[in-house]
Image (cartoon, rainbow, N blue to C red; front, side, top):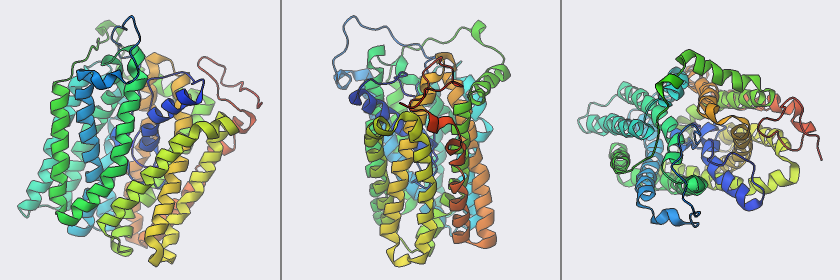
Length: 486
């Protein structure tokens, strides 16, 4: 699963037909990539789209809006344009940052581990309180400030590089700052759609935003690889700075209808955080899913942290080739999203979780095995990343839809923050461990450890009640009394 990370949809009830289920899958696709780090390409944290139902929705018009009408609404188009550009730019930086560290600064395994840990440390440090804080703020304003902080921090890297002063610790400091800003941007972004469009347009808005995001995931890495071939990595990073500025300007011109919670509705921060954690770990099915996802993220991060060194330095791939690998892995994710409704209809929603978990636990062995046949590195990487993305998306779309469906609206934000705290909070720890192991025993043995560890991640859902069920419980159902298989 890649970082990223991590997806409540605007629609919070089960779809009745393939079309509705397909829309739900498209909306959950970003969360699937965000919460996954099972050896797929590293998805940015901004891929999550969980819609916080605590946000007040604008008044609904008397007549339902026709399908596609959002393309003619200036307010939505303003937001969509800024987000499309920033998502595309983020894909370029995902490739440019490791290239800059590994090929330009000649970073060691430990330095790469620290850099990766810095990128996600904020989810461990401020991930839990951020959800409760943002529930008390204007989310669009939070996103504006976060975009400004990300643009300024990221711009420091090309400036320092052009001055000949860039060092690895500069990159680590920038990663820490951007990580905090991304936490606040993501949690707000997950909540803003209901305050921008009519309630009967929420699903359409999320579908359009996420379709655009996946197109960025397809084209961005390949374009980023091409740019790195004609420009230096710092100059490619400047393009992402420009897209963050575009998002900042777009949000300034966007108008929302958010109504803040009354101050008397606020409870002590610790109480609100605890309520979210109790909901997640008090549900036996959700608890097993979180443990599987967190374990997979931990060992997946161990392997993925050293991927730039493995691919660029040991296998000799060019940045352009690595960009193509990431783009083709996104194709696997898109196919996984498209096939999920049909797979779930055939085998059942509950059984799809352990079956997909077994699949994504086996696929990681492809990565270190490539060291045995380096001449075939490029096609084998494409196959491995493609299969990983497909299986991860099947798992995540299914489990994300379930947890959205069973969680009361007032707890959605805190439930998502609690889940992300666990499944992303392990990643900075794993990244540091990967750096230490890489320094001690080498890159390839460390990746083998990550692959073997992921094999055990599926046990929490494989050994459990999922096989005895066909469908997962609905909201307010007794989770201890699953539906029998049909």
